[in-house]
Image (cartoon, rainbow, N blue to C red; front, side, top):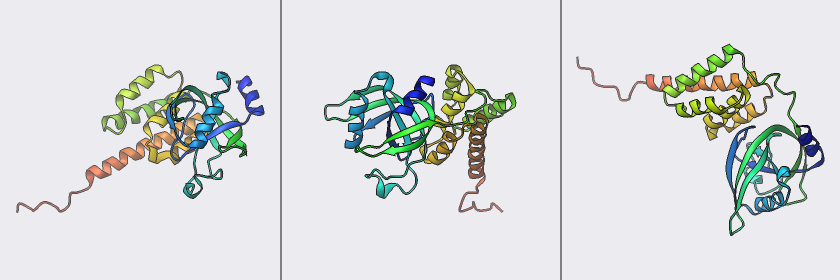
Length: 232
């Protein structure tokens, strides 16, 4: 990590803003790059040595639409630093790419000399004091996941697969958040990305699961309309 920090202190990182895409460390995302400015970004990134192919994936703030085509579209200052692990350049200059999230970072400044923005970033801190959750917190979260899976709100098979392959609770929580919070919850995903403490991230996600369960229960209790005729 020290080597990466040295790299970040001395390099401008290309920034790729998205309207509803929030990435997390340890999670991969496939993207299709078609805009001219970001095709140029990819041309520049792929000329770097493989170890230096970094992109900062950022979430655009509300109200960005009228500025989207400009370098002034507002973005959230905490972004996910991602490594370009695969790319395929199409014949017309577009790219299909795969990014792997590596670290939560904060944007310190922007460079707008090119058609796409580049940023200076620093690791988000202070880091979570542990990669593991308290046993009681873990058990409560697993219980809520089981309930939401039983009601079809999340994919039970995916929960089981993640339990088998993820190395620690930090990556487990981040991956659950990425896969289970829908695209319309991008603001909540961003809030969790910005939170350095694992226990707080788990609590936010747990509250969302509980809210989803309560909303479904209210829908199930809602009486039909018009009411059925009385048999009396």
